[in-house]
Image (tube, rainbow, N blue to C red; front, side):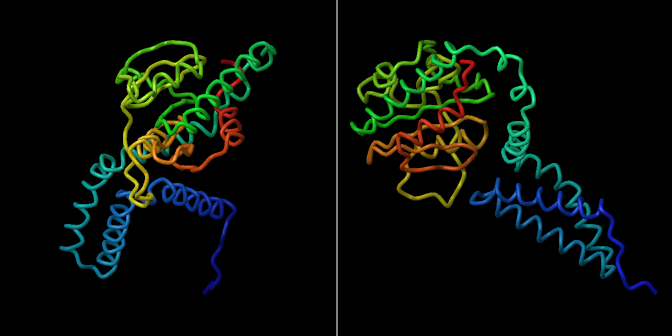
Length: 262
């Protein structure tokens, strides 16, 4: 009798891929209600295997039917997490953007324009942080965010620090909600964002932070949040929140998002 288990290279690759997939799923749902649901489903699935191994036919048949129908229910329950997972794959493997012909012919004038937009946004964030003016700015990478723009008031104006500060001034009708920047223009203001479902957040974080984190979970956008209480600047991207960001860090992150082709 052969006591050794034969392992092929493909078996090792298979195990590594499954481990990677489970890790990414964990990173997507940790700290959310979906994580508790996932643990419950996993326990039921393990119990089903135990029941089958013990040849408990009646209970195994009932649980088998439950699990079969439960697959459709899981798709509904985890629709946001599935969307984020697919978005993660698409965002991290952008071949066309990395090897596009436009990068070969990008001019210095265009790059200067992109840098100018970054300076305007950083200057506005700095001024609003100093005056403790609450603000929420959304900057997408590849997503167009058409539905999000339709939820607010269309502006379609060039990016400027003065305009951003005016929009978020507390006595203006547009200060509630988020500003969406698309390309080299301010597309809309007073936009409604989805809130995050994470439960392990700092209780001191307000609705702006939860909304900024929420939009970063379901799209590839980066959200800039300025606290009205402390004046600190935070960045939400990829479902992660970076708090108390310096102006240097803010500039660096914006340079990754606002490309030279704007």
